[in-house]
Image (cartoon, rainbow, N blue to C red; front, side):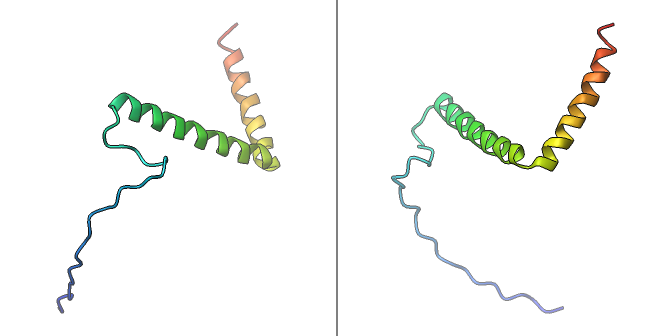
Length: 77
């Protein structure tokens, strides 16, 4: 079995970004969590918009919602 030839690559230290999208290392854990929550919420809203625009997906979602509501009604009787 032949050995793979490996090469090493020197890496340079990462440059500090001025972009507001990067998490600052000096941020408190609470601030980092809040930033993550905001990014997650934005992602969720974008995905919800994509789903709303997909008529076939929305029809399937509405059908499933109706099925689940029927099941839940059996518990309230």
